[in-house]
Length: 245
Image (cartoon, rainbow, N blue to C red; front, side):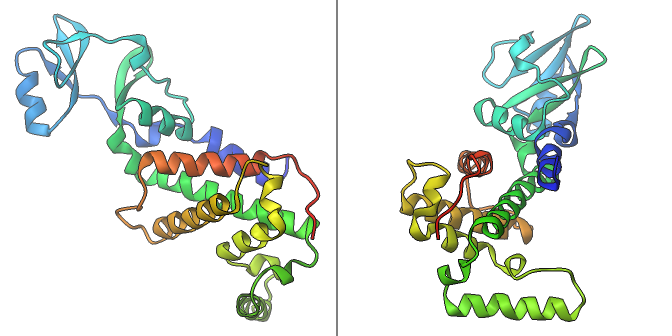
């Protein structure tokens, strides 16, 4: 397992849903509607004669909690993200009892933002490794201005005694330019068009910048971010093929 594999394991498997889940409040059957309105809750768990039942806005009364409303506590965070796109909320068990709740509102919490940024960083690392392995003349694929910018950063980092190469000094946008040339992106998926690949790389760059600057509005819907994460996985999972110059 290399460093990229270890990072991917961290972001895709080892961080579970619990850092974004909330402790469950259980309401009394005589006051749950008032408590929900006070807290602006859309869902609640109600103690009905000692039995925990769920109530969602629009229901006539509390009903039993179905199995498909329960998310295992060990569910990887990025899988939980996709599940919450399809369904607004889940309950989470602890020691065999419903003890936590996670909703679509929780998707905007810091742990998931770290997960998104981590996946983008994995893509960046992966693409740079492909350049090192297969594209010895990659400098021809970006503008002279962008190349000079990378060289300036390289010299500055060398002056600080950092162990680094020129590829490491490329900006994220440079990677999109390099892999859009000569239709290299088709090595990831033959169905890609240049326009689609460039748009997705631009979107990833915009999301990366929004995450890095802790912007409240990331500029994309959860469905659009899910499409971005799927795109990243396709590239990382693509068979390692030789890229032509």
